[in-house]
Image (tube, rainbow, N blue to C red; front, side, top):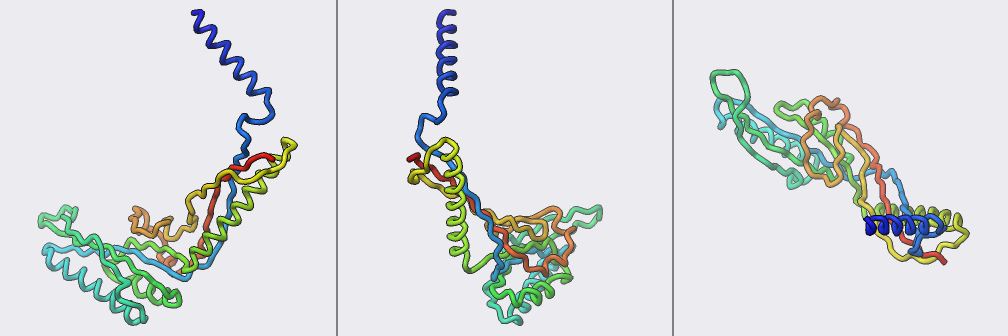
Length: 235
């Protein structure tokens, strides 16, 4: 019992000492800076799924292969490299239905890089409405991404310094040199076809089929946000 009372008195003493101090025991100010940029992309990507259903899986597979060939022809006609068409995750599944005859789904995911956005509408127009294609999602990027990220970090650091100066002045002190800095994750806040894709990897969305396919024709500005955490010393 005596030990418990002593412990409570010690904690109360520490709490009283801390609340009476105007500045923390460590001589640092922590400030988070933020920056936001809207940038027009010059690179685009389209992901979609090809699905064919038939009682004979070989027939379904042939349909899928035919659609893939049509996509490659479309890309070639627009003067883009066929190597920018990637076919992934080819699989065969039993189709869910009440039919007494078993049906089979043959599926694949197609990833298409569009490095010339002047071809975007022609490519998108050639894909939308084509049979067996669905689950469209799009993403955009910039070939000057490194420069954009550098500008974002510079702006975020300036914002952190401004906030640090305000906090230091609030205690009647001046902001000193930087003791440490770390950037947060770059976030792409743009959303196309109901998806937000930061790393440009394929992601299925259950609602993708229900989204207005007209959105696939739009080239949207990228909304990029960057944060930095900075430790400043007091002067």
